[in-house]
Image 1: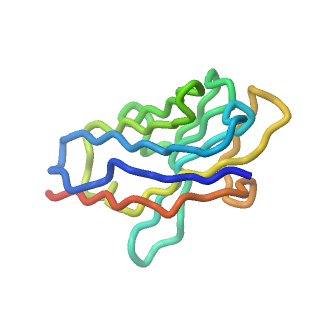
Image 2: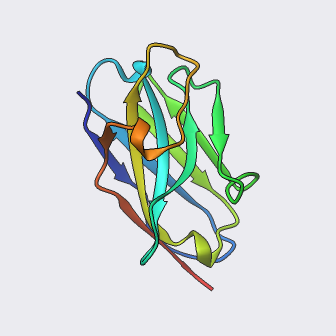
Image 3: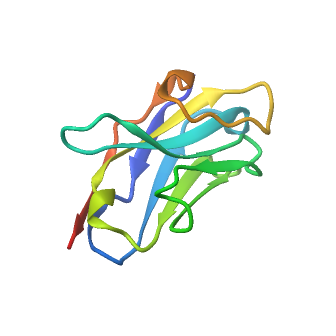
Length: 127
């Protein structure tokens, strides 16, 4: 079992940058594929980015490609989402999620594939 805590959200002007962090408990962080999802008011939660346990394989939703970077530091049990060139449509509650994986190269991009979720961190982007 793993517990996840997000941080780093806040208010930013359009065009600015934020870095979200997701701190995980436990000693087997490298065994978890990780992902970021977001949910804007009135909308379903949607996939943003995912990273494999070893950190070498990543996937992004189209709107995040070229602007967001997902990474992880397994020594620190932490995953990150660097968000650049923020747009008002990026405003949402951002959630990190974890899924135990037998392979260090797998990543997942659907909600049902993730068992563990953080409480979320709010990102607000002003025009």
